[in-house]
Structure formats: structure tokens, C-alpha cells
Length: 115
Length: 113
Image (cartoon, rainbow over all chains, first blue to last red; front, top):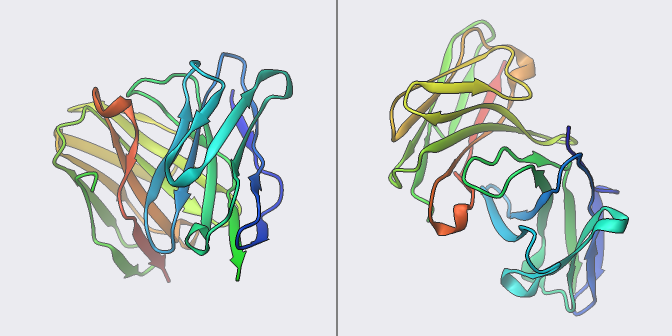
């Protein structure tokens, strides 16, 4: 079985500050990891994904995440927050990278950005 | 635009009535999924399909059924809606190409009163 833990439900940062959203996973097989973003009243959009290639993954909108097997973590970062980053962020894990991926999601973290 | 259309987008229904949500895709992708999103739970998989007439249960399938008679359409049915099924329902698709990414629809807001 696989699971994802996203500690805390809400993170607030100032515009221009570092964004750090934490994700820890549990998996009995090599995991494939994903970060999705959801803007209000919209569907989920893929930010980035780890599929066993490079451990540092770069995504859209300046976000990146680092896969650390020893820490079972896949934290999402962005050097400088922008007001448009305010959204809900979901970390997800799967046992495969292909099209037949059934994702297990964390509970999500709401990111607020203060002017 | 991931080529996914969900209908209806918003619906209010009464307890005990049947409800069907439709997911239509224009990408000809093989795999389709239904998730529900609830505060504090993230998204949870209800049912999924790996081809026409091939479906299987997900994590929270009780009270739901699905059908896929055509590649492009995946229907989710609540046989007798309950208040615990008030949620936002997301359809997702994936297939070969486009990095095998799973794409999500815009969601269907269902309220059971």
C-alpha cells in the first residue's frame, strides 16, 4: 500500500519569500511522485513529477522538488513566491509512471501569499 | 486544455435519487478515472477504466457504479444518493503519449440534500 503525508493544511508566506511545501511518502515499491496545483474552482494541474530519472525535478511556474529516498520525502520549493502561486497543492504517489497510474493523494496544503 | 468535459458542472439533488455524472474526452485516451475531493481527504479514487467495458473499483467505490460503452465517455452513477456523497467529483484521463500524464477535468459539484 502507498500513502502520502502532507503535514499541516495551510502555509502562508510573503511575496518574494521561499516557498517550501512538505511531502513524505510511504511505498513498498519504488515510488513515482507527483505534485499537482489546484486553483479555486478548477481542476488539478500537474506541476512536476519524479519518475526515477533525476532526483531534482523542475516543473512549471518556477517550482522544483527533490526526491530523497533516505528521508522518503519529495518536498516542493520555489525560491520566490508570487501572488499568483496562491492555491492548493497536492502531493501524490503511484507505483508506476505509465498511463495506467492510479494516484494516491495527500490531503493537500493551501498556500497563501501575503503582499 | 486537456480535452475533458464533465457534466453537469453543478447539481443539487435529493437523498435517495439516482444521479449520473458524465465525463467526455476528445483525446482517445485508454484510461479514465473518477475521483472525489473532500476537505481533509484530498482526492480519493472511486472507479477507473482501462478500456471499453473494462472497469475496476478504487478506494471508495461503495455506493457508486460506472460504465464505459465508448472510449470517449465514462459515466459515474450514484444509484441512491446520500448526503455523504456530497462532494466535488473529478474525472481524469491518461494514455500513451504526452508523457503519460494524468489530466483532470474541471470538476462536478454535487450537493445531496
